[in-house]
Image (cartoon, rainbow, N blue to C red; front, side):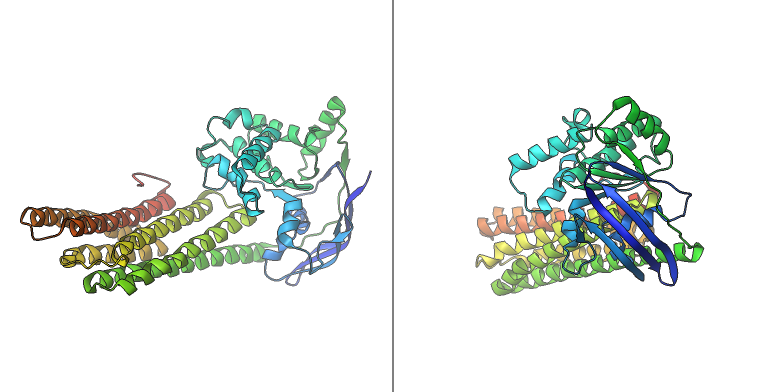
Length: 454
């Protein structure tokens, strides 16, 4: 049997805390390697070292050597993205992305350059079949993965990991939060001969069950129990440090949301100026700079997914990250609405009744500003006050509509101008709806209630 990974004299420190001491272990190809130990002895710390997830933790120092197919994973030339493709990981708590079942599985292949729909369809189906989930979800692939049961979500995460064809899968107590039936389904996956990878499992209770299953199935994937010499000396101070680091990253996420929100606010302000002054050049600038808002969305999405994959947040922490993902989508759509209305003016038109839009521009801008800062401050009452401004936005929209109809009847406005101004008013009214969504997402984050998102 070939050696897949070889760990020699591995030492790891969290600051001054010596967590892993002289750990030596050999991982055989296509064999299940399990290791056991009491809570807090360093099993998860060891697992996260094998695909360099520890790189994300500040103050971590590592000595020793870990090779994958005789290549040192700590070599500076190693592409960590490719390494984590080869060495995938499934965490204790299911962490599906807040998107469809299909997009969860296709996310990894897309990152690695696969764009063809036929190929993605095949990968999604094969991965879900490998994870014994296909028959349960094949008719609901476009539905949100968050609607799956806990056991289904964990099998989805395994399928997502398999979608990029890993050579090793790290399983960090993947059934600890599941019911017995879901636990059995996932444990059967690790013993199934079609799972052509090298599973490394952290789970003390796996030992007896997998041994029995191994005897019964006589699979070619034999069981090997290895207990590495791991000593972890961490107390409450280290746990508090990790929590503080996580909360700091959430605050940084809020900072990025505010930056994106400021760009959206500025776009609305400049759009109003362009309309009132007939400034075609300024309108084109607003349209061009919408690409920066789109880039902000992608950057914040990457930060959210990074947090979800690394920290596997649950409960309130999970709601915070998922709502950030939703809020950034609403901000991006507000930016799109503003860019779309500026495209009307950038075609060279000049509007004689653009002043009708001033109250709508002003109210929408204030509403977006107030609701975003209330969201970042987790101030549900202030967000509700801001969201209630949507009623005023709607009133101004209908006022503009009535005035334009009146002007058309009196022949005091060109038909094309009336259509353009009405479309512009509609874009602003839709922007107000997206601002209201931000309040709804904050309520979901705070109370777990989700209503009337448009």
